[in-house]
Image (cartoon, rainbow, N blue to C red; front, side, top):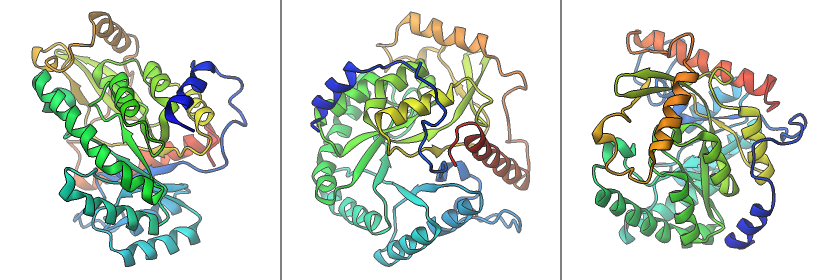
Length: 352
């Protein structure tokens, strides 16, 4: 279906989070795990007998299978064709799905690299590739409207270079809302591309950092959803704005059953990938002047709503912090968090 035709049909249907009964609405596939959930163990050189590092995608796949996960989303860079085939054989034997994470071409000279990584991903059984088109958080890395407009232009050019390769290999590319794009900006770029091969990795909580209402973000981006980063978020005030943390699923402010139901309504084949990052809270300095140069489109009313949300949903236990822990203690907490999230996904979200 042509992208604009799809949007017109989607607009005719409900776009609210209040859906019929959630029970029985989910596909019979367990939640997967994003490699970034294992920030402590991924390619770690720590000498931990109980929590050894994962040297590659095979290690991650094997471990997540022992946890009962349905699949993994992992970085594709530096795979060889032989490794991709080996990974696919093991993936098939374990009955798991595999998604990739890839960098889009920076210029025409980079298209060959992108094409080979697509080939390797496809040989491994990947059907969806997640990507980002920025160098980091908007309010930290871009300090003028001109700098952010330049990013937007470069991102569009990169995706235009990627699209014919995606079409040739019949591979879907899913652009994440990565604390960079406002939801309406991301939709505007997707409309310009107008490609069935380019959609969204819908991160459930990132856009809170840009003062967007998470329900509005979900409603805006869900017609394009190819993949997801499932997380729950908790908030706390601090002098310059608020702190933002991933917390175990079901402990934060997001209505996860309804968000997942809405994703499945728009794309019955969508995958749900846990991104539970175990770290100290992120500072969202929305009361400092240097937060705002690229966010002129965000209104005072939206700032007020975001700060009200923080004050109304203070995280009673106090936001989790791990920087004071030993490396081994951080490994323990990371594994506990991931296990707790997967249990919630099976018992409450019926992803099993």
